[in-house]
Length: 435
Ligand SMILES: [Zn+2]
Figure 1 (cartoon, protein in one colour):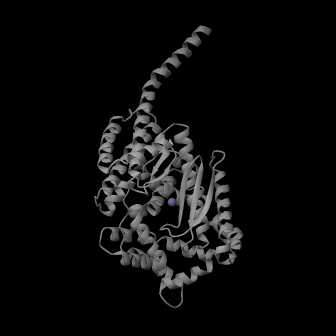
Figure 2 (cartoon, rainbow, N blue to C red):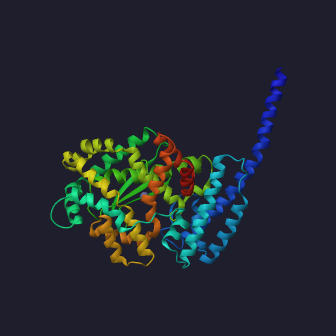
Figure 3 (tube, rainbow, N blue to C red):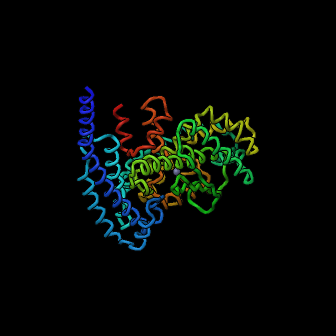
């Protein structure tokens, strides 16, 4: 009996080896392809300063890319060969979900890299073609009429003299964070976002970030992930900062947004599984829709409306020296303004497709998105630099929200699962359609 049991156990072990061997071969093939992909992304970065958003793989690979400085034609040719080899390495249907996801993700990220290389070489894509090629998604179309109802409600909520944007600006000026209180307000917001996140998501020990205040940028905040579980978060103080930006930025750039997203990718995919492709983050790729979408949706996960109002009243308004009794009214108005966010996509689409010029694009932001003039102009500079990337924020958030909320009521669990695995934007949409 004893012998029999051992023999039985040995058979299981042997069967395990028989099954594991092809999977190990699959992993080895993928690891080799992944290294070629990382080197390719680093090579593209030599032609496009915004492209490599984060890299914390072997430093010599970056040095080699810098020394080689491959021409775009050679990069395009290598990318095409790599795409063929990745297609040939498709795992069997019996492979586990993560193996399948890894392969689909690498293939699609590579496709986006090829599109970016083609753009750098001079190819002009229409806005929707570009967003599909780079971010695996297309934003819905809107007309002026789609924003009319929300604008009408705002007209009623913000009575007084002058045009709506001026009334909104005057109203907002009551919620400005004084420069000297900015850091204290941000620190309090970060603490609020971090403690809420840590109740639901385990982060590796030693994760940390640094906050810097910068000027003269086309964005309002940026997370530069450094690797080793560390982020550098930059906050742009060019324009006045209103109190709502504290939680928005702290959640979006920090917890549970970009910082947590990158930390979990590094921990779960790069370190635990050795998937080297996650040591590089090409900005113009489907990964950005997931990154921006989860960072924006994460604000609501960490701070559902009632919790947020309570925290704003009790902590942030007093820290900023503002009157807490105005908080509910402020957030009512902001919730309406948020419904105008697709006006920005529409302006970008028309502007990049050549239907309107930069001034008209700023006018659109002002009129239909309620951006103040300096903010509207900053936004057009952002579009000049990042183009169809704009869809990643609002469409990304809506796609992530629909996907997570279709999967049950435990938003934190689904959120953590989404940012711990390589999933493509189109896969979020497909899963939604099935439900
Ligand atoms: Zn972001």
